[in-house]
Length: 324
Image (cartoon, rainbow, N blue to C red):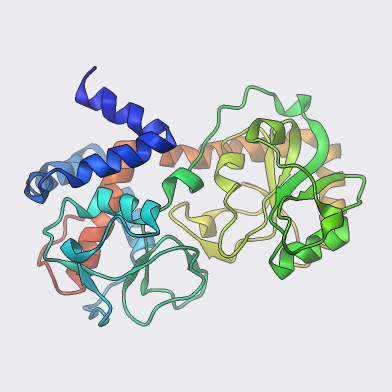
């Protein structure tokens, strides 16, 4: 088995994911830093306008902006302290840059914008969110994609939904629709919410037996949206208020997902419509599948991450050249 095959195998399992990242820490940083030029050379394989569009989407900095006092040199970041998955994912990219460079990170579910340029998984969809720079973090949880063998027309005409019901907007949804005949909804958390809503968790394949899958935001984005959009089912949700590397703000209502009002009042009307117009619902699923494809090229995804970081270091005054 080659090193590349071993690496691919480790990436597939949770234990392998951690083992791989531990092994990466054992490699001298200079080995990775020497590869940056070659990694950025992959630019020649892609449309430069497409690259710039996505880099500028994730990193909106356009003037020299100082970092805050909380910024750390890359070499000072303790990758093994929690939250490890975020730090491991960041290190997969930062390891190619000089360890003397500094950066600020916000880990976890982020629903605010810091006063200085900060790298994070998610950001709110406010006009002034320039300081929130997005990287593809917590990938094992958020970037699951599926191969769905069940055709849309062979799925059940119901809305399926399982989740932790702790946020007020999720609780309001359950209060409205828990007993609705067009829905199969359940709460999976035993603390908080309403014990009358408790139902067992369902696997992703069990969800995919249904035409319509509920995708409500939690503390920031809806974790299940990515795998729903890679399936033959359709996500049902209000327009997003937060976004990640998945660029949720670019999703078009009733083109990539079935859009319902923020107060959920039109859910029944929307479900009835798409049950009666299955071809339109299936077209939404196909559009969603097409949208997801742009995240499947792993070389491109790595390149974009490196370019986002390069732009971050450039506009925080630490390097002097940009590749795109």
